[in-house]
Amino acid sequence: MVALAAPGESWHEDTTREEVSMKIQVDWDRCTGMGMCESLAPDVFEVDDDGSLIVHAEEVPEGMESDVREAVAACPTEALSLEGE
Amino acid sequence: MTHLVVVGASLAGLRAVEAVRRDGFDGDVTLVGAEEHLPYDRPPLSKEYLSADECPDPRYREEETFAGDLDVELVLGTPASALDTTARTLTVGDRTLSYDGLVIATGAHARVLPGTEHLEGVHTVRTLDDAIALRAALRAEHAKRLTVVGAGFIGSEVAAVGRKLGLEVTILEALETPLARAVGERMGRALTHLHRRHGTEVRTGVAVEEVLSEDGRVTGVRLGDGTELATDVLVVGIGARPATDWLEGSGLTIDDGVVADETLAAAPGVYVAGDVARWPNALFTDVADGTMRLEHWTSAADQGGRAARHAVDPSAAKAYETVPYFWSDWYDGRVQFVGIAAGEDIEVVAGDDTEGGPFTAIYRAGDRIVGALAVDMPAEVMKYRRLIGGRKSWDDALELAEQRRRQRAEKARRAAEEQGAST
Image 1 (cartoon, rainbow over the protein chains, first blue to last red):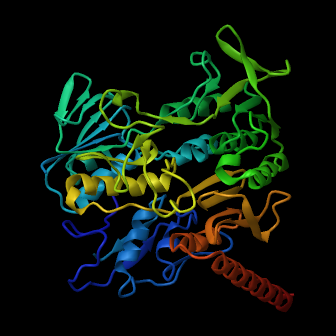
Image 2: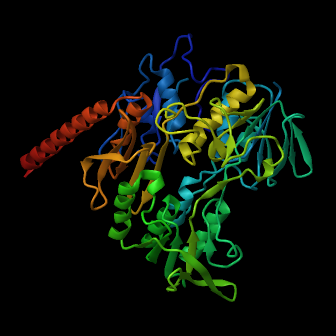
Image 3: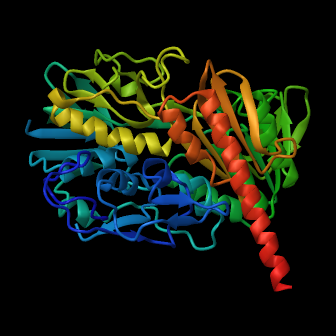
């Protein structure tokens, strides 16, 4: 199973605790460029004209933790995950 | 709140149990499923599961994940048969489960052509067992001709697979324009071009009068005008009906789905999610009347998590609104739609729809952009999805379209330059 958030942590709201840096992982075999991630976190994810995914940041930018988590959870092919939570 | 019961073990049900555990809910969780199978991924069943030489395992999680990480009791293989919202009990086979919070995510059943259920060679595509049977039928040596009843998304995907496997394919559609309800008349015509371009015959405005058979196996269909079409495989893709029969007498309001309020609540402690759920989507109540029921992967996933959170803590329940999104893979291309196909004011903002694409079209209702459709332009619709979700104006949408046009032109110019430099 894809680890999405630490146990007990709220899914939707940003937590007040200090975030350790989280790396965005893409399973390129699974990604089909569906674009849910782009609609939820457009500064981080973008689908290119040929349908391939461009990830604009290796690590989750400050203040975008909640958007990126939602994007990870919304991926229909479970191609996205976060490392270092 | 000590016991959450989730009835329906597909995507919405899975997301329901995962969401509350992720939030740290430490009560008991039970997941009830009518099928023997562990929760599995449905979208591929009408696509690559049928066409790929090696069929991938469609299960979302291993059994150990439910017993271990998720600590969820699985009750699989028997459908729920009754609900008592006063006593807060659910009947599953000979078991009675008491709940404090309940999520109903029982999905929908494929509609069938009455009287054909037991004929060999007649298939629907809804469950994993359906897909296993159809996969074998399409690949059987004698299978040369495939007839699909219904030009909806499932039927269209199966038709595309049939072509890929080298079958002769005919689609029969009762309406004059396929998919008119889902994407509007003009875009329905545009999508039909995709079939014709790939050698699939599409007959619209036709009625299937009778399914012909010999020795218990389908041999063809007779149409309303008396024409007979021979076929080896018949796929029925005429939609789905929400699985609500078991709720008769429960006191819940049933009207093409279980009717819920804006927080997905159908009764105290009872929340709905996925294909079975009908609720007022506040994002569109100003442009489209009443409630909506969606049969999309994204809404099932989203509603599953929301409904379960609300069920374990009703005091924190919030209105749920969403921009619907669905995709469909036809031949080598992808059809994507976001929003709703309200009104018929449609503008093609990129490409050309007269030959079936690639193109992008946007939908207007009042002063708002409410929908966007793209065929083989995967970079486009999600940009409009944000505008739709933000209740942006039609002018904002046209501005984005213009910006995208400039970006594509600039990209093409640079690509041409590079090409020139390298030769």
